[in-house]
Length: 238
Image 1 (tube, rainbow, N blue to C red):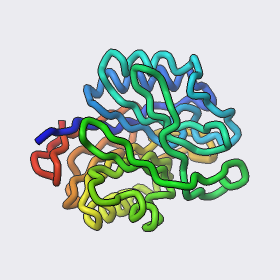
Image 2 (image 1 turned 120 degrees about the vertical axis):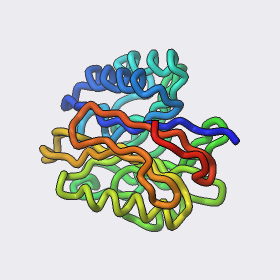
Image 3 (image 1 turned 135 degrees about the vertical axis):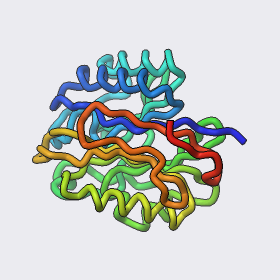
């Protein structure tokens, strides 16, 4: 039964500086040694709601594309994209593409962004990964629509205040146990704009029974991973 090596990363973030953030993403990809590496919400720009959109062919992503090419990694990074969406970019050795647009907006986001209209499931080496961004995880409808039969992992990119770390964990555990799936959460650590001066960090990976397989601390720069087995069997931290 084929396994999946997945990691969650919480690199330091420089406001608006896509090139610097992409370089940190690239370093995390090289350090992770994983097939899939997940990054926080708006990780390439910081949580700056007025940041310009990031194009799929933006040359500032070159370092991240190169790291994915060298390691065979699929990186899931956060950015504002054309159409005024908060999105997940799927980056591999061939370039970047918009994989998912956040469906449930929160706070001041509706003043700048439009919601996406449909869930997304990525296929990676026989595994099916359902994508989510931050507030999506608190809306049961999102998980219900995304986690159709056969989806193996719910992958979420987050920005939360430090005081909300327990909420982040509760949502992940509930989704894992309700739907019988692995959950991988990449949560911003350190300042990231938009009033988020102290973020939660504590990126983690859960098994379908709600057990934490891997957990980062609260500081920026950490990457943790796990090897997942289908149905939770053989899953372990790495």
